[in-house]
Image 1 (spheres, helix red, strand yellow):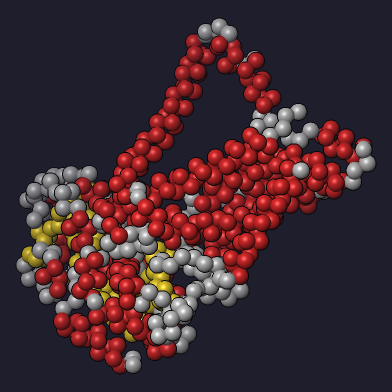
Image 2: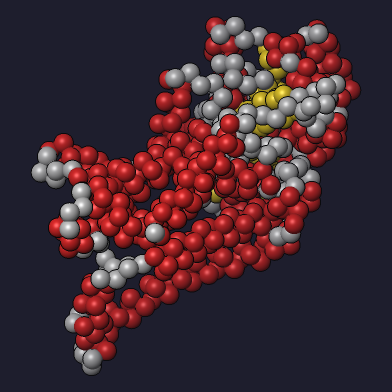
Length: 303
Length: 316
């Protein structure tokens, strides 16, 4: 990403790595380099072990039935169809609710708000803090809000999507601001100098240039929401659903909840099923991240 | 014009999602004499596999009925049940007076139905060769609140046991299993030493016990049968000699005090007014043997089935 490019260049030219490569063989830098590689290797080894063991464990049940069947009490007949559909539906509504709101808020804070205003500074500080709040808190918040407005059945798609939207909204605001900040000020000045209004500048110049950054960040945030179970469990998420979710008020289950439920069963076959479902979740996450990369590569601009 | 394309794509998505949501809610089966609607169950995660199995079998009979099961725990389930949010509440213990009071306050009348039997097994690693039977007093010595920090070795429980460090595992405070065990063994619900390793996931307990030489823990009998290569259950002496935990001893009531019934609480109004709830609950009891077998629990005795049917008959 363009934000990090200058920093990367600086590292390559001058500091630690550059010097070691350029012949600075002092023991300290060598030890430091080894330590860096070691920690990288450790993280990578954990990841590979986790993925490989999950794939090996889950592979016997990674078949069409997993995608088309409903949960059942005989593990050999069970599938994760409602969980897959539920996850997709909840994420779709989460995206619909957060993206416009988050991007608009980010644009306002970065392009239009007066940064010297104490009120705006408080909002900024809050957004940053909210991004670090544990996900369960958003579940509790949604639960409290729904109870306050008297919603009885809290296990509905719109409730889950609201909790997840609250969870990733601060992240989307932050990535929008980062992406806008990476657009050189000269682009805005040039546009304004040619007589465009601030809004025209935003919609025709600044925002289009920031699309790759916003899209990448948003999809990564949505991937996080896809893997969340805690806020949905607080809302009374179902562990057994024998129908497809079909709208905002429909009951639903999601992949992490289905996995959570199956790993708690006594039968070994259910654990295999849980591992196979984890692979499906992993595949969905990888697909979303791949879309992020494609969007970034396709629309990226360099100045 | 890349932005325009992007915006176009986004708005198409938005519109299609709105159209989808417009026809939201549950589907109603167009077939008129088939039942439709929802049956909402919540509560104990121990009982959930039973209700799921019943729902699973019921789907073959009445495909139009949506049975949903959630697992908020026995206590959490009653909270929703007494607020009128659920039709059925799964429970691994009887309803408490204060919970029943909330139900009464909200005008929720209910009926308690026993749907299966469960044995709480006291478990040691498969390789343990010195413990065959534990009395309730010995269990109390090990698990009582006053044992905390003092009873740390097996030979403190019985001098004939070797000097092996006790490694204790059990369910956490949210589970009905925990409430039941503490009440039966330590005399007071919730009274237990706190220096044991708790987990709500029984498979974690199995791994913990199997991995410690002096491991000891308690959970549902089905986890013992499924992990016979790792762990085994010890017999329990409730005052009438050592009794092994098994289907027969749980059913005939000789496995005391750790054999227990599992309940489903039925909202009377739901049963009377919603045909799908009545149909489901009747089906549940009618097929209890198959349901219990699917969920790895112990079925009801003929007498228990008769009691359950009588209870339901009074509800109309």
